[in-house]
Length: 319
Image 1 (cartoon, rainbow, N blue to C red):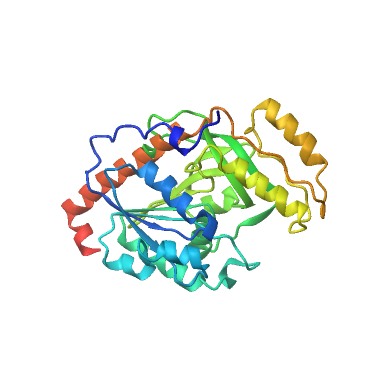
Image 2: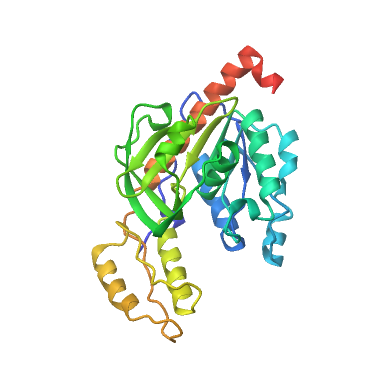
């Protein structure tokens, strides 16, 4: 029996330094089909002691089901300004335009990024949102990869940082993206890379300021079967002619016997054919959920400590 979201280990006990009622916003920009799963994944990592408020960009077109899902539980992004947020998580949105600034939601997203950078204790940008934030704030353009970077990669720490306290080194992290950020460009603009992979490049990086900005190119929030579902979706897109290249299976992810079976069946899949992609079972034991829980516990502890310092100096009230 393969693990599901219900089989995941519970997040580690909340460190004593985290106030019981931190308020964290989630600006969820994911595609319709991933809205609920993304919310659930981040809510699990934040844990029950955090007050989670949900927001969305009205400029992102939604289907009827997604609009009905957001309606009673999520507020427009501009409501963040009066919500009393301590911290914010911003997710990416599947791009439609060749250039991010050409997306119809770009002005609203950049307003949210600028507000968060000045008015939260810390903001965490996930994957495409990280690419959008560094482009908008510092003109750092992402670069298209030769092929999709998908898999679970060993990400090694570059030094000590509170976000990495008690975490394994290397840190296993799922990645799923078509673009990359050059580390040299990030360093030149004042970003500090905390973890990187020889195969996958930059993983976790930060930039201090009025808000501590935290950036993830990977997806530590993923469920054990997230990469398996994405791979099968990509196989379907290849069969249906929606993508030209045959997708590679996620690296370092499937159990060996599963990987061998998938390679054989997927190799026979042809554009325009009638054959369905094979089932893609998740690994029996996913290596990253416990480390992801530790990373988010560290982030919340950092938010709590930083909020306390800002409150003592009066900077929090001024913001």
